[in-house]
Length: 282
Image (cartoon, rainbow, N blue to C red; front, top):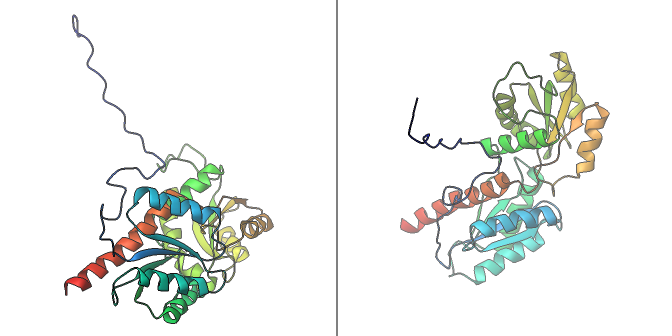
């Protein structure tokens, strides 16, 4: 009873957002950088089209003080080498000219070889960042892509009275055999979120999608879904769709310009930048 008094205001209910948040806690980089800080060069494995441009736009919006350069590797790295030389011309001699972050989710021998060759060809001091995965943010983004396609529950709570749309997931990536092995950690993270068996596969190596489907069916998973563990430029989505159709599985969209991708690019740059600043202090 609370006669004669207004009811106390209800506290707001905190709901989980599918977005990564905003403000200072979202930014993985310092709020300011010196004018001669290394450029952030985003190396795109393919044409630097709409997806890569949108990712770059998100990064620039959150970090307008970063000298961000978007470069395609479609020519094998020649343009990348030119970009390194350009970045070096804008900075004091012998300083780190750029940090190059490959726009791939995991190990990708062809991309990493092109990046290293471009660094050698340019003869400039450049730091090479790691691929974006594995990372829990990418597992979360894959979960969202599956949910958007109706292939997974949106929430990650273990509600046993709710039937899952599928009972097995294939995380399909590029980078050949090494790429598939590198996707295993992300498959484990996604399995923990969905409480379902999740196995990796390569769209361009082994185990391939058919191998992964057979592995899942041997443990009783027959309603399958495939989620491309790619950003977009590094693989033709039609290839993933065809692979899913061949095994009778549903197919989610690639990661694309998900905010997790943009955030991880910034994190890779920030990590390299920390090493750069530490070396300056030595």
